[in-house]
Image (cartoon, rainbow, N blue to C red):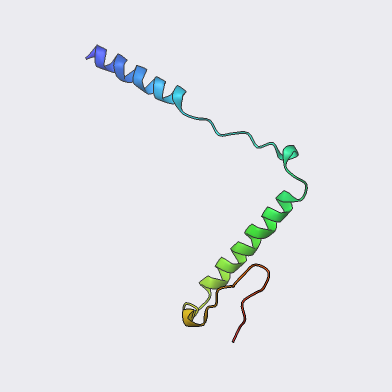
Length: 79
Protein backbone atom coordinates (compact mmCIF):
# COMPACT_ATOMS: atom_id res chain seq x y z
CA UNK A 1 0.00 0.00 0.00
CA UNK A 2 2.81 2.37 0.90
CA UNK A 3 4.63 1.59 -2.33
CA UNK A 4 1.60 2.55 -4.41
CA UNK A 5 1.28 5.88 -2.58
CA UNK A 6 4.95 6.65 -3.15
CA UNK A 7 4.62 5.67 -6.80
CA UNK A 8 1.54 7.86 -7.34
CA UNK A 9 3.18 10.80 -5.57
CA UNK A 10 6.29 10.48 -7.72
CA UNK A 11 4.17 10.15 -10.84
CA UNK A 12 2.17 13.28 -9.93
CA UNK A 13 5.31 15.29 -9.20
CA UNK A 14 6.82 14.25 -12.52
CA UNK A 15 3.70 15.33 -14.40
CA UNK A 16 3.73 18.75 -12.73
CA UNK A 17 7.39 19.36 -13.47
CA UNK A 18 7.02 18.23 -17.09
CA UNK A 19 4.07 20.55 -17.81
CA UNK A 20 4.88 23.36 -20.28
CA UNK A 21 4.83 26.93 -19.04
CA UNK A 22 3.12 29.84 -20.75
CA UNK A 23 5.48 32.11 -22.68
CA UNK A 24 6.09 35.61 -21.37
CA UNK A 25 4.66 38.42 -23.48
CA UNK A 26 7.26 41.01 -24.44
CA UNK A 27 5.13 43.97 -25.46
CA UNK A 28 8.20 46.11 -26.11
CA UNK A 29 9.25 43.75 -28.92
CA UNK A 30 5.95 44.11 -30.80
CA UNK A 31 5.94 46.03 -34.04
CA UNK A 32 4.75 49.63 -33.65
CA UNK A 33 1.03 49.86 -34.30
CA UNK A 34 0.47 46.09 -34.30
CA UNK A 35 -1.24 46.09 -30.91
CA UNK A 36 -3.53 48.92 -32.01
CA UNK A 37 -4.38 47.05 -35.21
CA UNK A 38 -5.19 43.88 -33.29
CA UNK A 39 -7.28 45.84 -30.81
CA UNK A 40 -9.28 47.46 -33.62
CA UNK A 41 -9.83 44.07 -35.30
CA UNK A 42 -11.09 42.32 -32.17
CA UNK A 43 -13.27 45.31 -31.25
CA UNK A 44 -14.85 45.19 -34.72
CA UNK A 45 -15.32 41.43 -34.41
CA UNK A 46 -16.97 41.84 -31.02
CA UNK A 47 -19.32 44.49 -32.40
CA UNK A 48 -20.32 42.20 -35.29
CA UNK A 49 -21.04 39.34 -32.89
CA UNK A 50 -23.15 41.59 -30.67
CA UNK A 51 -25.10 42.86 -33.70
CA UNK A 52 -25.73 39.32 -34.93
CA UNK A 53 -27.23 38.39 -31.57
CA UNK A 54 -29.84 41.11 -31.99
CA UNK A 55 -30.98 39.91 -35.43
CA UNK A 56 -34.36 38.17 -35.59
CA UNK A 57 -33.17 35.69 -38.23
CA UNK A 58 -30.02 34.70 -40.05
CA UNK A 59 -29.05 36.88 -43.04
CA UNK A 60 -29.96 35.49 -46.46
CA UNK A 61 -27.03 34.84 -48.76
CA UNK A 62 -27.75 33.94 -52.40
CA UNK A 63 -24.69 32.00 -53.54
CA UNK A 64 -25.98 31.82 -57.10
CA UNK A 65 -25.04 35.50 -57.47
CA UNK A 66 -21.48 35.00 -56.20
CA UNK A 67 -18.74 35.82 -58.73
CA UNK A 68 -15.12 34.74 -58.45
CA UNK A 69 -12.45 37.19 -59.61
CA UNK A 70 -10.70 36.28 -62.85
CA UNK A 71 -7.32 37.72 -61.87
CA UNK A 72 -5.76 39.85 -59.19
CA UNK A 73 -5.31 42.76 -61.60
CA UNK A 74 -8.90 42.89 -62.82
CA UNK A 75 -11.78 42.49 -60.35
CA UNK A 76 -14.78 40.36 -61.30
CA UNK A 77 -17.62 42.09 -63.09
CA UNK A 78 -20.89 42.36 -61.24
CA UNK A 79 -24.07 41.86 -63.21
